[in-house]
Amino acid sequence: MKNIALLQHLLLALSLFALCLGNWSCSAIPPAPDKPLRIVQERSYQATQLLVSSERISEATIGCTASGVNILASPVTLRGALSSNNVPLMVIRKADPELPYSFRYRTEWHIGVSGGNPDRTVVYALPVPKGHCFKITQGYFGRTHTVDSPYKYAIDFGMPEGTPVCAARDGEVVGYRTDSNIGGPSTEFSECANYLIVKHADGSYSEYLHLKQNGVLVQLGSKVHAGQTIGLSGNTGQTHGPHLHFCVFYYDDLDRRQSVSVVFSSRSGVIHRPQAGMLVAR
Image (tube, rainbow, N blue to C red; front, side, top):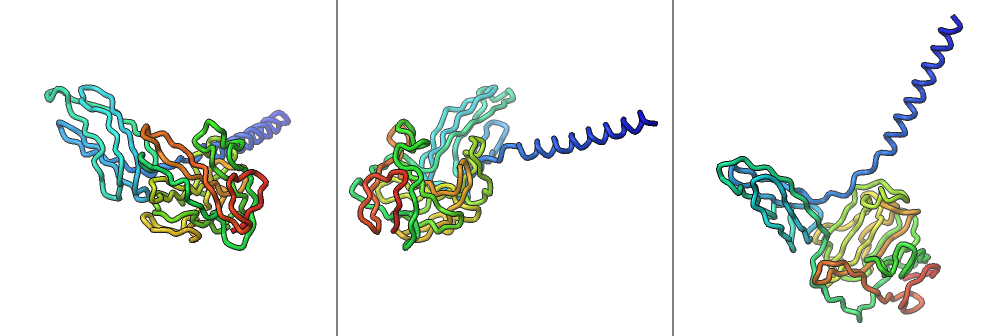
């Protein structure tokens, strides 16, 4: 009887351990990355056409390649306007009309198009609410804004979650995400940030990153003005704490992202070189 009781206790302990392990495994599942593009296949006996659309990106650069059996398909790059309607991306045809065909395709994309020529004379508004003071937690060439990265001129503003985020310059909203409620310090969260992208008249873009869930307060295609409240700060994506990541950038002729150093107006004067530790107010 003692052996039976001991065995029952052992089985119970193993069951509890398995339950805990199962719960841990669930919590360790990587969060879903951002997938704003929708690819539709219109397939026939002789060919397949790939169509792309998006509900929350209006301008993008999309590269597409295909490989497979008995196909003819050249790599393509789509640059320009997207919509919620299907936009033609690629046609994959049979090489031999009498034989079956199969294929796989791969896309790489980013919001925005090349050809920007940033106006270096523009003075930007701080992307913070008027009348409040915030600390810059990371400035140019910071720990994660290294000199060899496309974020070398990004700035992080320490902000509690839910703080109003303001447009730094006039422009048009060309992309956003607002559904994520996930954040953390590891790289598995790098594609889980809510964001807002605004295009300026000179072809450059401003990026507002780590917004809270449902924290985008403007619509795709909206015209925004410097100082206008456009979102709410948060802690989504790869972060070590609540903050707003702000960066101005453009894409060069080789589609490489290049960040831009900017000058800010502030309550205490013009800021030419934002650095960690600075207290700033609009």
